[in-house]
Every structure is written in C-alpha cells, then in structure tokens.
Length: 616
Image 1 (cartoon, rainbow, N blue to C red):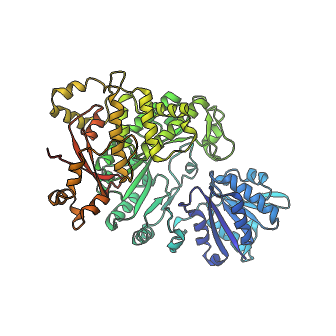
Image 2: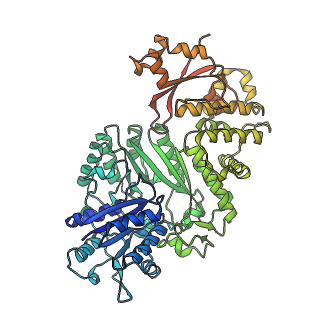
Image 3: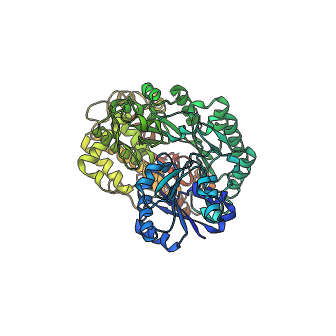
C-alpha cells in the first residue's frame, strides 16, 4: 500500500515539518509513506498530474491558510478521477471547523484535528496494518454511511515522543530547517491560534542538545524555531542559548520568536555576547496602543520591550525583526501611524507591517462582528475594514507596506532613506508619501528591478521638491552628525538651521544612492544618473600603492592590484556622505570610500566600508 503525504508550501525553500513528523512517528510504515512537497507558485494541473501518477492508495494534505484553496481544488479533482481513494486533511486550517470543511468538500474522507502524530499513526495501522477501527481513533472526524462521525479531540502529547525528522539531510538540501522544542503558549492573544493550547510542553534538553549539535555539525545555514514565545520559560531558553553559543562553528544561524519584554538582564547579557549572525530574533509588537493591547488580551510591557530591543541593537550582533498588525480593535489609521513610528524608532533590521487574519478557532473570529470586522471569507481571511479603519485606510496601508519592504527591509537604500527622513516630520509620512507617488504615477502596478527602484526614488524627490520648505527635521541618528558639526565650524552650524537648498537635495541623494548601490555589490555598470568616479587618479593609484593596500586591505595579502580591484571598489565623494545623510545637510569635504565585499555586515550583508584619506 502507498500513502502520500502532500504539502503545498509558500516557497520552495520552506520544508513542511508537520508531514515529516507524521511519517517519523509512524516509522514502521516509512516504506509505504511517501512525502510530496510543492509550492503555491506551481500550476494546480501540474500538482494534480504528479499526484495522480503516484497511484496512491490514500492521499493526506497538510492544510494552512496559504494553500487551502489549492488543496480543496486538488481534493475535488482527485475524487473525480479516483473516487475510491481516501483523501484526508489535517492541520490548523481545518482543525477548528472540521465538520463544515467536510460538508463543503464532499470528496474528503476525513480530517485529523490538532496534533496529528498519534492519530495519523493509528490511521496507518487501520489502512496499512488492517487493524483497529476508525471509530476508536481519537482526534478525527470522518464520513460513514453518509453521516459525519466526530471522535472528539485527542489529548496533547508528550513532546519527547516526537522523533527527530532530520536524520537524512539530503531531503532538506537548500531548505530552511524548521525545528520545535516546545508546543503551546501561556498567553491569550485573541488573534492567534497558539493561545488555544495553553499547556506549554518542553522537549527534554538531552534530546535538544543532541539535535542542535546535529544541525551545527552538518553546517545547516539556518534553523528556525517554531516555538511560540520561545523565551516564556527562561530556564529552557537560556539552556539553548548557552549551548549554541558554546558549540558555535561560525556557520549556522538560529531564528527565535520571542517576547522581548520578558528578557531580563541575564538573558540580555548572553545575547550581547553572541557571535554576530549566530541568532536572529522575531518580536511581535503588533500595536503600541494600550487600549488595543488590552482588548486583544495581549500581555506586553512596551517600555520593557523597547529597552530590550535597544540593548540588543547596541551590540550590533543580532538581527531583529519587529511585527505590527493593522486592523486590530481600537486602532484607527492615525493611531496605527503612531504604532508604526514607535516601532520604526526602535531601529529593527526589519519591520513587518502585517494585516489582521481572522482565524477560525481564535477569539477574534468570535468577536469579529462585534468589532465591525469585515474580512475575506476564504483563506487567508484578511481584514478588509473595521469599525476603526475603512477599506480605503487598509488600501493605503498596503501601499505603505510595499514601500517599507522595498526601501527599508531590503537594506538596499539605507543611507538614502536616512537622508530623506529629514524632510518628513515622522517616518510613516515618508513611506506614505512614497506610496502615494507610486499610486499616482502607476509605478505600483508593475514589477521593477533594483536599479529601477533607484530611478523612481530620484524622480520622486525631484517631483516632490524636497527641501523647498526651508526646514530639516531631526533624525534619530543625528548624535554623530552633531558631533561632526561641532568640529566643522560656524558654516555648518549655520546650515543646521536651514534646509538643504531644493536644488541640492537631488544631488545629495544621487551620492547616497551611489553609496547604497556599492554597499551591496561591485557594479559592472554605473547608473545613468551617477557621475564619473571622482578623484579617479587617486582611486587608481591606491591599488598600486603597497603601503596603502597593506594598511586598508590586510586580508588581501598576496593579491594583485587587479584582483583587489575586482573584489573591492573605491568611490570618491565631495562630502562626508554618511554624516551628511545623518544630518540632513552637507558636512565635510572630499573623501574616498573603500567597499570591501569579502567582509560583510552579518546583519545587513552590506560591504565593509572604510574611509581613505585623499592626499592633496
């Protein structure tokens, strides 16, 4: 007998931990269970053909909000082609409305609800081993003689019984590894399904340490912990952080979703001492509005969260990803703008502007009508409007989300965005204005390459006449610029009180964009708006001067000048471009910057940038 476990992932690099856990728990039937993984970007017809050719005796689909539409279509088509073949569903998307799902999908035999390892194993005993009865399997609902039979929910299981699924790493080549050391969440956030299971269960550290060492030894690029609020148990979190710190080989990155406000001094101390790039943190802020946080039953102390994020930032060794959710109760467009500005000022490496999903099984689903929430009735159940936010507001925020992804989260425009922030009172205002420009010009309706995004940003600045209102707003990174200004004399002090001339803003932007471009890669061709390399003779002579190359490029010992030029780049600027961007006005005189692509920032992947004094 052949059983197929099918997963349709959001991206190729994702692996579906759930179906591998199901097969591993039913190890005695491993030879009969085949795993098939696809992505939502594939054609339904191609997936159908592939599944049909397997000629399986049973197919079971892993169901999530991102794939439910495709899964239901495939299940119906498979039933039409092979009506005798059982088709089963499982996963969070079908666990909380299982009966309705079966009534809607006549070709589906049954559904596994909740944690599926034990129920699936008994299902395999029934189908493959020919033993037992469906009516005795807890955690399933199924069809029998035209009726639905509900066997109730199964008790949550001991997490130590779940086998390690990654023994054969060839199955996961070029994939992100997902790993869990706990299940359940002690908190009660009304928008989240994790709050349904409040019984937190931890995997024994003797198993965890062995499995972590496996990842480290196999030099896995990234391991994403799927534990909800990973640090809700301090002892467990500290044991894992101490282990990966002590056994780090400089390759594997570990991703954790944490509650930053739970971090105490001991935890922050160990985090500050991690190798740059060893771990990254995902932190759900969701809103900074007290009324909203209280209404969604979220436990969060914003002041402690902000302090923790700031302390982690100070070490510049950990990538921080902060989340916001638009569409929550008691937060209108203008209050959400404040939440955005609050989080932006925390300076995370990534700021995700997400939208409320009204998930079946969550308290938000029950309260949706009371909040006036209108949402898509099909997956992903995303909010369209609420009593506090109109659909027009949601659409505007969609535009802002896109601009944040392109111009902030990509880290391809860091210095340029820092500079342009001076011409807006708040960070949100900049992204909102840029989104409106994309909408008005039609740029938002087509795909753009990286170089085109720079061209559009320059057009935006030129059309908006930035600098014409004779003001420069302070920037959160101005402390350094202020110190430079103090050393630069009265002329720069006077400039601090005035905005950059309107005609000067695009010219400074061209320099910041050139800086941003070369910070990412050694360009083969320069953009049309970029001038010829300034101080070219000095830049050319640099690579032939052994004294300078030994001083500035010690790791290139033994390389020829041609090899060094290929692996680095030197660019001349008429001002101190980094401090100019931070201050909002021109600072300093001519300088040359050396971009070293062999040494990169582990958090942003930017080249190492060194200032080289230009000889007169």
